[in-house]
Image (cartoon, rainbow, N blue to C red; front, side, top):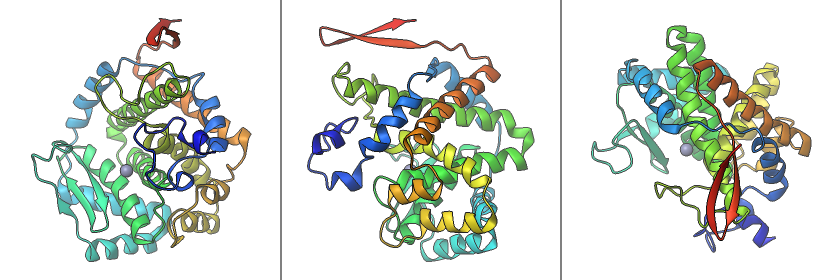
Length: 311
Ligand SMILES: [Zn+2]
């Protein structure tokens, strides 16, 4: 059991708490990867990022507009009540500004801790999208439902709502929004692929070529799942939505992954696998829209070294 939970995980994770609360169990991770990996597209990450940076920088977002937008996101999913909830939490724990020279956030972005959100605003489309993500952490923390293995799911759910609402409210930004999402999710999809290599022992450790630590258990799992749970959410009645948001954010004692997947009718091998497949299809169709050249890779192990074979 212990060994199984460590699969696809941080190499340095050992001893860092209860694995059943920290990691995604194999019963979920296996069908998930079974679905996502075979059709996962690969891009030249630099090309997609360059496109994204140009489009994103062209959309100006004054700080107050970004803050209002993140409140609009909550109102969009849960009505005035959820907007007021966010307002009240932000009064209790006001936004703090990260210094310009913060090592991780010289660009737009931030993090959330028990004192609230620390954020660096850059004035571009990144701000409202990433701020919405942080409000997911903020509300979950405040409501006592931020367990380690679901915290990113709560945040990416809000990020996914932000993309959807941005496309509706600002159709003129449609390309910038779509490529923002494509790049974000393609980077995380690539982490899943590398995590699988780690599990197959065709990759020596959990660092990518830039030295960045990756794992399948947090952001990467969360972005794939949130794409699906938001899709399910949109098809729900108002009452069902309230209940589902309650399971996601209001548990009071740490939300359970099983409860969340159950609330979105996804606690089932076939549905989890399908969720993975839909993610890969989504990335491929968005890449086609932007005309990115896709290719797939198969990886074979040669004396402990990585050899990537183009199919
Ligand atoms: Zn996060």
